[in-house]
Length: 609
Image 1 (spheres, rainbow, N blue to C red):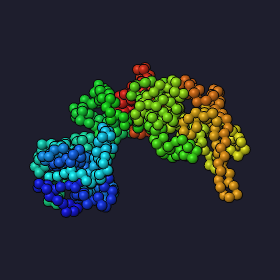
Image 2 (cartoon, rainbow, N blue to C red):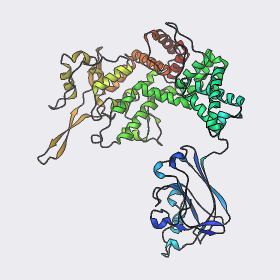
Image 3 (cartoon, helix red, strand yellow):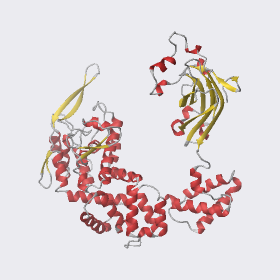
C-alpha cells in the first residue's frame, strides 16, 4: 500500500527527493512504502528480488538516485538497504535488486519495502570521488540547501518476488517431482519411490510405496491441491523410523553379520561426510558392487576428496582431543585483560580442529600429530602468539620453526585452556587429559570427600602445594601416576602462552570497603619424574617422550578413537583382534593418517555388524 498521497507525472509516481538518512518524521512524507505480508507468512529462505521500472531527469550535476530498503518503523530508522542505483535514463528502464532474504528476514525489521528518491550513499561506493561527494553534500558550493535541486525520479512499475526463483518450477521441486505428474497414480508412485529410496537409504518395497500412495489419496480431498498433498505425504516419509534411524542387520550372537550394499553405503557416507549417500554412492549400492574391495576403496577415496569430508575431519579432531571441555571453561577477562574471551576461544577450538584435519588431509604420519613442523593459525591466534600475522581470517599453515612455538597437539592453546580454571593452569586436569586422550589410560575416579589442592596462602609454589596434597593417604596412590604428566605443562598459562612465572592475585579491602588487587608471581616448576623413571623438564621433553617411549600407546589410542568415531560406537573387547590386524597392515603400508581411515573402512570391523 502507498503510505501517502502521491503526485502523478507522465503516468508514473513522482518521487520527491529527500535527504539520505531519512531518520526524522519530516522526511518520511517523501517515502513510499508497500506492505508485503505478515512476517510469519513470509518464507525464511531464498532471495528477495525487486524490479523497479523507473526514469529520471537530472538537474545539473544532480542525478536522480533510487534507494530501496526493507523496514518497519514509521520513521524508517530500522530500514536495511536492499539496493541503490543512480537513474540516468529519461526513458523507462528496469533496475533489478537482489538480496538473500536470510540476511534481512528479521522479525524486528518487519516486512515493508521503502522506495526512496534520496542522496546517493557514497560511503557504500569505494570509487566515489571528492567531487561526487561535494555534489551530493547537504549544501552546494554556494551554500544553497540541497532541497533546492529538482532532479526528477519517476516510478512506473514495481515488482517484488519472494522467494525468487530463476526458473519455474524451482530446482527443489524438479529434484523431487521430475517430469512426473503428481495427480497421476503411476507418476505419484515413481515420485514416492525415488524420494523414499533417498530418504531411507535403500529401495522401498512395493508394499511401502502402496501404503504412502494410499495415504496421499486419503489426504487429497482435504488439501488445496496435489502439491500440498504431496508435501504432507513426503513429510510422513521423513518422520518414519526408516529415515530417523540408521537400520543395520541384527548381530547374530558372537558372529559378525556382513552389511549389504545399502547399509554399507549409509555407514560410509555418514562416517566420511556426515550426511546421506550421494547419487554416485547410491548407484554403486544399487549395482551391488559396493561390497567389493575395489569399489569400496574407490568410493571411500572419492568421499575423502570431497569437500564434505571436512565435517569428518573437523569433527574427529573435536572428538579425539575432547574439545567439548572448552564449553565448561571461560577466559577471565579481568585476569587476561588483553584477550577477547569469546573470539579467542573460538579461534582456539578452530586451531585444534584444523590442525588435526591438516595432518589427515596431507596423509602425514601419525607421529606428526605429536611432532608437527607447522602451526595452524588465524590472524587472531597469530597476534595472540606473537608471530607474524597471516593474510585473511582463515586458518593457515605456518612453519613452526622461528615462530617460538612447537607444533603438535600438546602445544595447542585449546588443550591448555580447557584443562585450566580460566585463570590458572591446572596440572591435574592436564594430566588426566593426557592419560585419557593420548594414552587411552584414563585414571580412576578420585575417592569421595577428597580435599582439593590448597590455595596459595603461604607463598608456596604449585609444586610444593601438590606435594602437600598428595602426601595424604587418600591421595598418594592416585597422584603418583598423575602429577608427573601434568607438571611439564606448567610452562604455559591458561590461554596457551609461554610464561616465565605463574601469575596470581589476591584482593585487599580497605576501611572504606574498596577492593584492591594485589598481583603475585612465583617461579614455574615444570620438572617431573614420570612413573617409568624418565626425568622430564618442560613440555618439549614430554612431547619427545610421547613420540618415542610411549608412542605405541599413543598409536593404540589413535586407532581406537578413530575406529570408534567412524563406527559411531565404543570399541569392545571382541573388536581387539581386528584392530590389531588392521594396525599391523597400516604400519606396513607406511602409517599415513589418511591411510588409516581407509584401512579401517576396508576392514571387517567396518563392513560387518
